[in-house]
Image 1 (cartoon, rainbow, N blue to C red):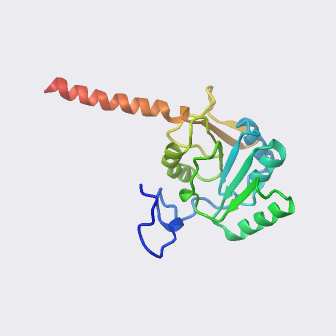
Image 2: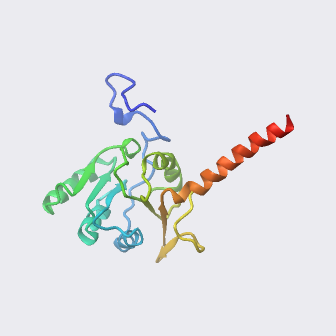
Length: 203
């Protein structure tokens, strides 16, 4: 789909591209800090990572990733301007300009191609709306980790059941791309070719 503005005098961030991006897909509910740390541990966050937290709230994942896991860069996206301003102040107080960024934008319209790690605490529906964007924009080796809610249609990196990790009563779903969805794609391709072959055989 074109990245150019299709209409004059309209903010490009407000033009729907995926799902229903003009609406929030989840309320702000902060992830407990012990779960934040576990998510980053499971994802093996480190100095080579650029992390995007979609719906970053108060920025706790961003600051934990920088201060405890020494990631290269942490970028937060949130629709709530009040939360964004608070995080901006914390960035200045902690003197983390250049390493932590916060944007008052709609994450459906944010370019994720530079991400090596994406963190989520949305809803199953919100994750499903993001899935096509992830499959189009995220590069091989990128990890996506979701608190409590899975990404339907993807396989987690955990091979033995259950497909999630647990921390107390919280579930953590870890995905690595493209492994998370390549089996589905392969099955889809086989199914398509099978239908073509069957039509040829019947003709």
